Image (cartoon, rainbow over all chains, first blue to last red; front, side, top):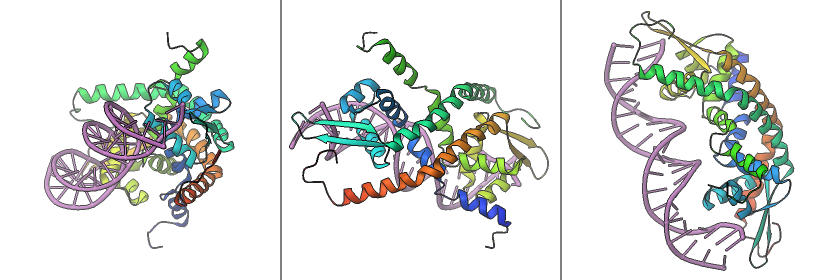
Length: 141
Length: 141
DNA sequence: CAGCATCCTGAATGATACTG
DNA sequence: CAGTATCATTCAGGATGCTG
């Protein structure tokens, strides 16, 4: 009301005000290790123990693996089962939702394999021009 | 070599060592304003000026809009055209790559609309249980 | 084995003021 | 109009050491 925009624009803005569903999902997947953990669990096809994941991922710290797993559990993508044995046994697995997100990460992966090289190339190109200094006078640089 | 994993696992790890294409793409899209700027430019269907974007996005600061546009330009998703008039006129538009990424953000959006509510619900559920304190003795909490 | 607690660094985001 | 510059804040990520 009173923003000076037409109805359709107002609707567009309403959809994109913070809380947009896409950003919720992107924030989940953009965590540094989330994609790797999800992928590892997908690949195993069943539950994995903490140190199995840790070894498979190689250079992740315990803290980050714990944190990533907690977040994924909180978001309902991963389940955590504790068996009160000695030594302790904790198994992580994908939930239905976690399995389903695989369809999305696959889509991202397919797009990425094709286009990420173009993004990298664009960056290199941009950085080279930037290093060459500002252009003297240009239209549509 | 010498990590104790079989060939197939080694190949999996190689793909997911830092530099995985999916993460490059996710890092681009996960910036707080990237999705909104891309969406605004898509919606307009043509070039938009700096302050048009600023007004449309509402609560973005100049700094963040500038930074987001520079990043998107660097990544080859947005083009920047400067017209040396008085007052200055700068137009931003989607490149071919920027237009193409729309197919991906659409996919994210479709998945998100269906599943983001489940993620939100899982969080609420998790937080409620956490607030209730640790469970006394549980298997597979 | 599967973690938790602590401390630290750099990057992302933002508020504010100034400028060609 | 379309920025740049500076300062403050927050937080993700990580190194290290300890524990039920």
